[in-house]
Amino acid sequence: MRWASFRLASTCWAARSTVASPRPLFLYVSGAQLGESVYAAAHVLAALDGNGTYLNMSPKCEPQLGKRGLYRPTGGKGPGPHEFALLWVLNQSNGARSLLDIAARSGIPFPVIRSAADDLIRVGLLTDFETKAQRT
Image (cartoon, rainbow, N blue to C red; front, top):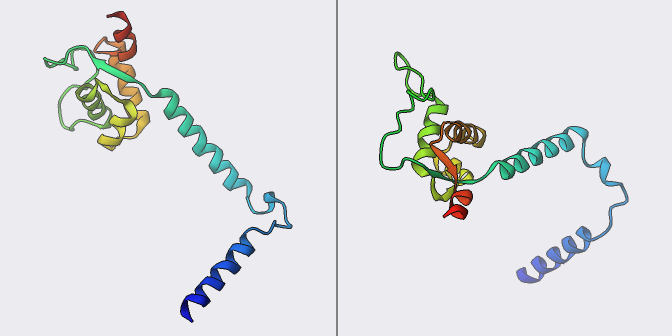
């Protein structure tokens, strides 16, 4: 008896869900919701476009980020999010992990990781793994 009522209820729900809606879709989605969706899609596409796999060019020594203008002078405050991102990118850039992987492991937002990678490329501490692999 109990199984039959469940089966009847699920059949009625399935029949109702497949009936075409008489109202157009734009009545269900507001402009603000659509704007949020476009904003989220733009961020996903930017992350996918900015992703890459890199190789640390000095993996066996301390790169002295302060001398290269990447680390602020010591005094008072600890390292900020950008400095932590620099260290994470240097540590994890072994040619196997992408920037999205590094952002997921570190918990640092992807734009900060991307900015750190750009700074490290600019000073020559990081190189594109695919370009390096093609040369050798």
